[in-house]
Each structure stands twice: as C-alpha cells, then as structure tokens.
Image (cartoon, rainbow, N blue to C red; front, side, top):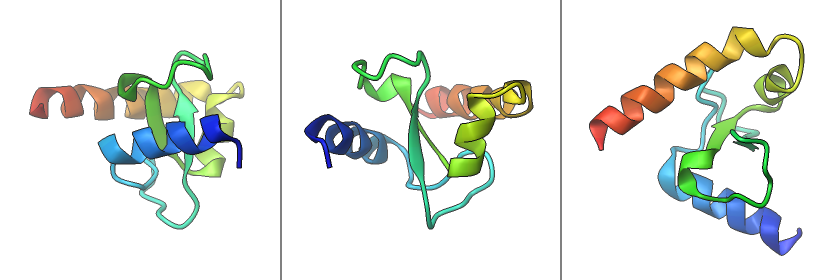
Length: 80
C-alpha cells in the first residue's frame, strides 16, 4: 500500500465512521476526495463511500449521490 493511500484513509476514518455515507455499507469502504485532488488529504476533503457509490460519483450518475453526500456534510458540520 502506498504511504499516501494509507495516510488519507487513516485521516478519513479518524474523522468519519468507516461506512458508506450513502448506503451504510461497512464491509468494503473507499475514500473519495471531494475536490478530486488526491494530494489534498484534509479531513474536510475526504468522505467514506462504498465502491458502488464511489463509481457513481465519477460517472454521469453523480447527481444521484452528491445531494446525499452534501446533506451528510452539512449535518456533520452542524454537530461540530
């Protein structure tokens, strides 16, 4: 595993529960960089998603999951 890969996953899961924020999947969880800059590993740029919803984000179906992700992030910032 590349060091950067390990680092951004560690950062993400220290700030978010290790489950897809769209569907709740907990077995296989990836990390998406919201601004799509893989060098920006700030906690605010990282969200946990399952492989399926990660593919949605990078496809023409992005509009089906981004409102859910945006709502999650808004609720998270309101709790902090």
